[in-house]
Image 1: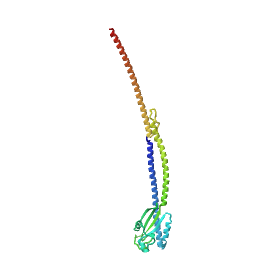
Image 2: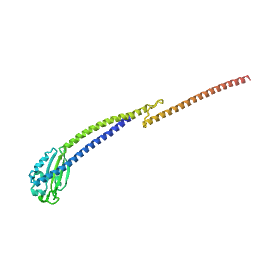
Image 3: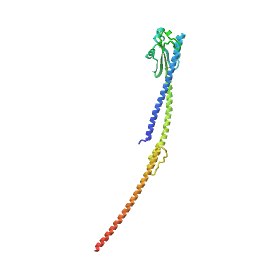
Image 4: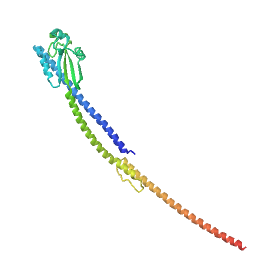
Amino acid sequence: MKSIQHKIYALLAFTGIIVLIASIFSSASQQRTLAQDTVAENIKLLADNYFDSINTMMLTGTMANRELLSQKLRKHPNIEDAHIIRSDIVNKLYGAGNKNQTASNNSEREALQGKESLFIEQSNNNRSMTYLRPMYASSHYKGTNCLGCHQAQEGDVLGVVKISYSLADIDSEVTYNTLITTSLLSTIFIIAFVLLGIVFRKIFIVRLKKLGHAMHLTLRIEDNAEDELGWLATSFNQMIATFKDNIAQVSHSSKVLIHSAEKIYTSADTTERAILEQKKSTDSVAAAI
């Protein structure tokens, strides 16, 4: 026979494991999302600063050193790529530029059409976040008139700033934190489950076993707790007391019935003897006549 406590323990364990798994996945997802949001904000800020630096080079006539700026950015441990993609307007005016300044995929071509995008790519088991920010011709971009030098119209796309940031370190940190969280929550779960099992056994199982073993009419369950099991024990004691009273009454009635039967039997025997004596006397009289 399967014990109810095993079923309850199994249900508690199943529920606890589901909650544990959900908590771990939720924590990991929140950490990853927060880290990605932080990186996204930093990439956008870095792209703005990079473009401002390029703009300063344009104004100071040092555009020949633009690749040096890009190389310095790429030396950052997590920055995989940083360069400017030129539009056709700039190419027609200043030439094609370096090889990496030409759009090489659909995302970059869409960015040259004015679509700003931020996306995550997977490569060799490592993730990277790429930000493509179109640069628009403006008559007043932070105090600079772009229209004269580039011979463009207001709102034309002059190029795209591309920044790619590796998420490998962040993913490793999230994985490490997830392992720490898993270990901590698992330890808490095991301790809580053991303590809950001990308390549950003491409060319910032991008292129910006492109730199950109290099958003799002379026994009473000593349980004065003000809860459902305590009330059940009190009702059980009252039921046993009622049984004892009813059995005592039945026993007394049986004794009275037996005593009455014995009296009836004695009276019947006496009557039978008297009838036999009377018969003998009658027979004697008849014989004398």
